[in-house]
Figure 1: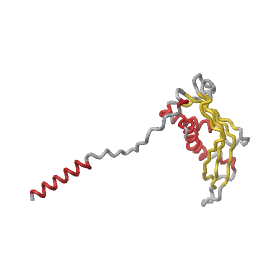
Figure 2 (figure 1 turned 135 degrees about the vertical axis):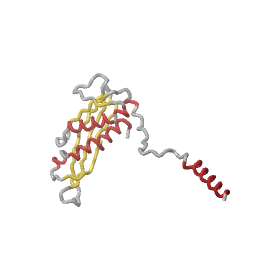
Figure 3 (figure 1 turned 90 degrees about the vertical axis):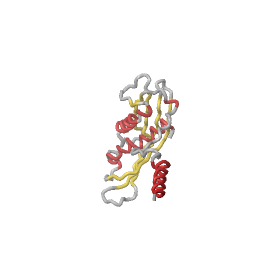
Figure 4 (figure 1 turned 45 degrees about the vertical axis):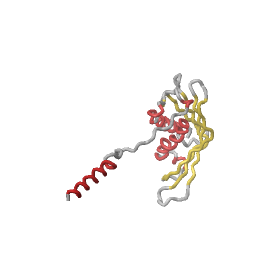
Length: 187
């Protein structure tokens, strides 16, 4: 009987010593790897002023909303990039300028949705974007880059779709994430 007790104690000590007690701690929050370093040519920039204009002729998209959404996303990334949005109308010396030009605005209705009161639309912005340094040097640019998203909207009017709050969420989220990701990291 004593041998069985000693064998049981030895097994428990072995299990605890080899696995249960020496496992790494379980974290309740996920660990994300740090973002890649920003592009070399962007180092030293402290602030970026965002300007948006509309060369599409459609004028269905509020350019000030696009600028505000990109600027807000820029501020959210400031902890990682150490570059913030600059709200001044005229940039200070040392500030960079991100000029976004809407070249084409497309709204396409997809086949009817299962729900009667909502329709699925494809929204697409084709833009030119240029980041210019304080000395006037072009640091980064995109030409005729398309950004597309699908969503469900109640309106039948393509112009009204661009005024929907869901579009604002897309602009401040996925659109500006992709744009700034390409600018900062080359994604």
